[in-house]
Length: 106
Image (cartoon, rainbow, N blue to C red; front, side):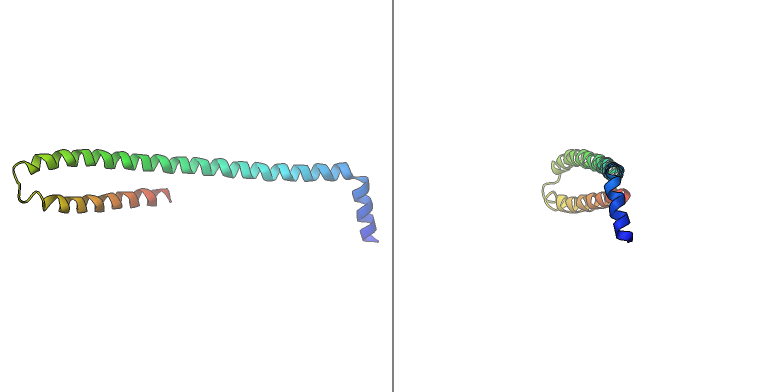
């Protein structure tokens, strides 16, 4: 009996049911749009931070290159040993800076 009443209600009120389904779909699409926009904004902020990180790294690399050239002129023998240590230290600093940026983002 109850099943027949439900089917009768659906047959008589098709427009109302279609409106409720359309409203539900519209709300779901709106929620998806909001999530996509929020994710896009977060990714944009992450890219900005990474871009700033690379700007800092490239600026430090330019300064280090100028300092290395100035140091290489007077010291020929130790010049081959010093850049290796500086490169290792610079790489460690780069890794630390990148990890700081990533930890700030997440």
